[in-house]
Image 1 (cartoon, helix red, strand yellow):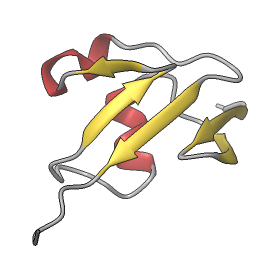
Image 2 (spheres, rainbow, N blue to C red):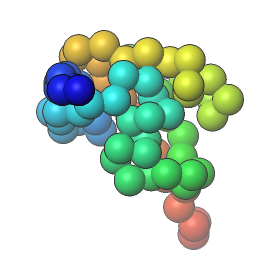
Image 3 (tube, rainbow, N blue to C red):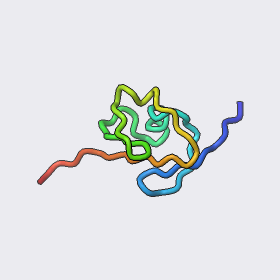
Length: 70
């Protein structure tokens, strides 16, 4: 089965991806089960809702990892 690519913007970078749901995309990007915050087109997406978040061509995704320090 041939999968198609779609272009989205991830943290400001144009990126080609195959995943169509946010949870799948995080795995594709190598985040796996890492604790990250996500927003699609400026709207926060909680971890429990990522499987239901369908991605579309030209969507803007922000992935933020927690940092220590102050």
